[in-house]
Length: 161
Image (cartoon, one colour):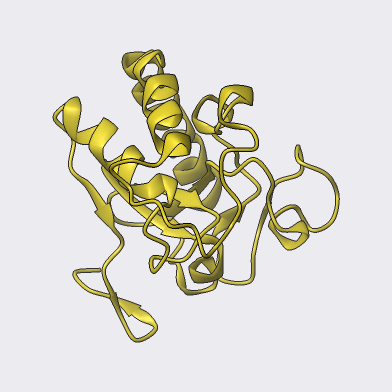
């Protein structure tokens, strides 16, 4: 199983073997078809929508520390990202991997997709936000020996897929 990061807008370009897991505190309404955070569905491309990775959402210790797009901070001195790193350091990584594996098997069985399952950790911000959680998520995965980069885009297609 492979891991990548991306953001909500790109889900429209996913293939059925790409499984988006929201790491955001709040998801767009369309991600749950306006039916609430527990609602999941397969979109017209056969991609599951509505799955949330609650253990990876920024918790209350991160609350109120970010929100200004004109923030003068850098990812290295951003208090929000520092607190988020601390939060992730407490997550049971083996449990996270086991959950991802279970989800991938269930989705593959329900959707009969071909190819290797790809877990895509969805953040709210686009890649041009330097203080996005994606950097911390990628570092956290790498600290456990798993490569997790931004899903490589080439127009509407993904490189290597």
